[in-house]
Length: 507
Image (tube, rainbow, N blue to C red; front, side, top):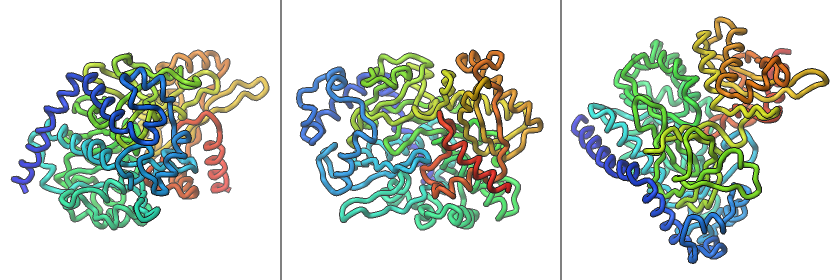
């Protein structure tokens, strides 16, 4: 296995030179991809509608094609789901990634072309390993297996030619045979729908394997880790898998989970690698081991644009090209891809932390914020505040959500939080104060509204019983996969729903 590991590591490191190339010439690479995408789609129905043949520059593209979202593209996607081809992209689309993103009832079916599989998703997976091998040349990752917490949906057949499942299921179904050899558990368990049974089966199937890497969302990884420790009677994961060396994560901010992982994997040598991979594409990889910023991957068949957050509500918001962005400003990402998404706003917001090369951090969602009083609290603010409050009180958070408390008579408004702890704070009131004060430090609008409680009062925080969010998701039939608890909402739908459930359980 050591020889195989050396060969794999060498192969993975070869790609680093190409990564360095787009880091050095980012605008040239993006221009090249822009022309490739436009040329490829000029004879599709969409390309003819917007006369792609006559588009020569990104500026013409921006003037001609309006910003899209899932609702505007949905009629075209539905025809593709029925088997029609050459609508948004020229090659046959047979796969669709089913995504809900949040707990909303509407499912999105994102077209996944062969090109986006090969040139985006799989390339991103390989690059992630290349970067890791480059940063840790003495790694032994390929001497064992990778534990992958896959999606919760089997691939389903829509018709003779069309299949759908959540992204991880689609990727697993399309992986080359050799990749399956390095993965655990096997496909029959990895793609199980019932997450409660699945966690038990995963634990049972993996405790006797030589696991060297784990990939998955932090919340579900912790659930699995606890099952493994319960089953084996061990006190940490290194006693079960002594050769575990890297944890690859994404989808949610890792900061609130870091302390729990240090306890589960008590090793200073453990490598944590964040990726930014969505149903719509693979966008970023943490390329430095001493920073959690992610390198924006520019040669994956994606052309990027960025809408400043203050312009999001405009009828036809102006989008900036890569060369026009500024540091530390909030932007909504707009993508055009080799899967047929055109000027598509994916709903995530990011900030650039570096412009040479282009590195980013995810700051939240275009719809997940609280701005009931002009305070503009985004997920990034919330995560910073919670991380600091946890450090100050020895707490560990499992899940949370927050929303506004509206003005009532003479009473000021406020924010209401429901927080479920894995480890209770040693001083609950201090936890609230540190969280509140940190929000004031990192967000001047929030601070202004909190001045003498004039517009915003001190936050109301509910200490939720164990498994509150798990039971809520389960009641909504939203366990696992792409389903996540909405962190922040500008209305009270989620807060009221969960409080009602907590009240019923306590009665």
